Image 1 (tube, helix red, strand yellow):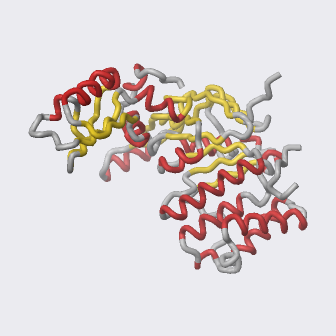
Image 2 (cartoon, helix red, strand yellow; image 1 turned 30 degrees about the vertical axis):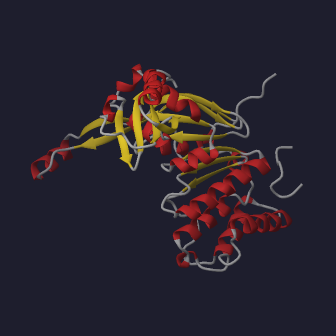
Length: 348
């Protein structure tokens, strides 16, 4: 019998009622008597499941409903309707056993105490989660090694750079060795080197513990490095749920053809083969409709002195941008729309 999913969401929705009024004193006085409101569907009936040990990318533009979903799954918000379970718990009931098994890391939020050394915040978390002293010491040791925290632990949080603080934030969130990680923009604002280090750590933690990870990020390098599967939401609705590699197949109706020519184009117009994206020093990059790729490559090889030719799917950033550029409701017709070490496995 197949195991139950770690995360199970069925028709989950969150609707906010917001007030509106016109500018000016008269409108302000009128609103004291009668307020005008409207409903905002932050999350609109989404359904999906995540299995044990998966790292799933949860993608969408600003305002798509990603953070609202993570807050419901971590118990910070009540849903308006629908159902959700994580590790068999309903998150918004905030059961203590559930809170000990999950963590939420938000790149734009600070859980470290600002004016005390980082290690003191770690001690505070140890007391909150009632972590045994020996286990806590081992875990801090592993986290310190993996994230290179030794020079940082005795510094006040206010003296840390953004990258240093983010490493410490992640460590503090993992002291109790959670089974489920909700990571909301964990690398936001970090330089490329620090982003890579955080990605490597997340992958290492997943491999060592078998933890389940739901990750949001606007950096596609994060998603490509960590996630085989992605879930895309847009305007609060589930738009795609499947392999990252399949996203381009479903939503990008074109291929990128890169051609190196022996003697350049020789004055021939290249736009007859496709949309010219780049042309320099005998190298041309074309955007070609997917259904015409075989025909166009055949013509290029027959008509030009081709030294090298490569056909690729478009960069995943381009695919995501194309999906998100669709107006509200316009994506419904698109194909594919849905929708014994301290960190050794603790799920005994």
